[in-house]
Every structure is written in structure tokens, then in C-alpha cells.
Length: 263
Image (cartoon, rainbow, N blue to C red; front, side, top):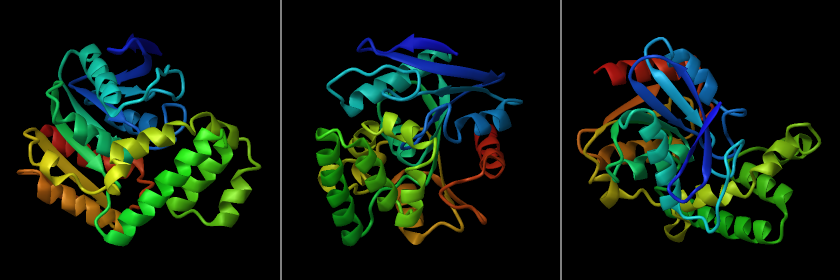
């Protein structure tokens, strides 16, 4: 593990795997290098690419600096890209996909962007539900109810309540609670103020190569935003991975990424 310093002085921990053109992986909610898909994907890409996986601020071995702003996370990603030589492809999963897309409008050295199921809203009911979630989450975190914040998130994304209750008594739960404050960061990246609408105007300004992916077995509320994102970005490519859900398998995702980066 090595670390870099972001523009505001926050330490960002990262790992480098493989060799070849640089790829930076951006995790989604609750995930970081020690917990999530990044390392498995990095291993799949390592024969062809140098893959940089990093802990987003407030997670894992990275630091955090208040107050939070999405721009600080864009700066964190820019610092990782600088460490990678100043130019890199970026892969984002879930809310990490939303961050990657936002960063692609900032001219920070991104050559390609591949995103998997950015969880924007495409329907009024979905927007209202997200706004309710973000409001409740903010209250949980303001009162230091980290366990309730994690439970709220898991219920929001569709985990059955009995499963959530069972998880609360497992050894992994403290790890979830440790990064619970970053759930608010993911909500900000999605822009809770407008119910996580697909940011079509911003996406239309992206000029780099973009691949938008979803899982063929995912629910429509995740697949519809993927299609909407692809439609909003000039010349974006859209693909669906058969039999995959939001918990996409590394050996299903990696071949699509390798093909895209080689094109």
C-alpha cells in the first residue's frame, strides 16, 4: 500500500496492481479496497493494465477532512490519476460510477470512463424515495446512529429487513458502521437535492470515451438509469452483461472492460 496527498491535504491510500496502461477503480457505497469488488477486478485486469485501487476519503486507510464536498472527491481522483502518470482510464461501480462521470467533466486526465449501474433516478417515485432516504440518513448521522444509517441504506437498496437484522450481529457490521458517514458522501455525489436525477446537461459535456454497463438480471430501476446515462453522453456505448446483478462478478465485468479499453 502507498498513499498520496489530495489537494486539501487529505491522505488517500491506494494499491497498484499489474502493468500496462493505467486504470483507476472507483468504489461504490460502503466499499473500499479491503471490502468490495475492486481488488478482484484489478486482478482480472492486471495482465494488461496497471490498476490503481484506492480508498475513497473516510474509508479504509484514507483520511478525511471536513467539510465534505463532492469537488474534494474529484480532487482525490485527480491525485490518483497524477500518481498514475497523469492519464488513466476510470472504472466506477454504482455511486462510484456517478463520481467517475462527474469527474469526467473536469479535465483531470481521464482517457476512458466505464461505469456499471450508476444509481440515478428516472421516475418520480424513485426520486421521492431517494429524497426521503437522504433526509433520514442525514438525521441518523447527525445523531451518531451509525448502525441505523447502515440499516437505512441497506433497506433502501432492497435488502430484506430480516437479512439486515441478521447482518447486525455478524463480525462485518462494525466495518459497515466505520464507514457509515461516507453514505452521506455518496448521496451528495448523486445529488440528493434533486432526487438523484440523471444529470443529462452535465453528461452531455463529456468528451472522452464512455462505456455504460448494466446487469441483465438487475431490476429495471437500475437498468433504466444506465440507458438514460448512455443516451445523454455523446457517442457513449451501452452494454448489458447477461445474468449479472448489481453485485457484478469480476470475471463478467473484466472482459467487457478489456475490450473497451483496447478499442
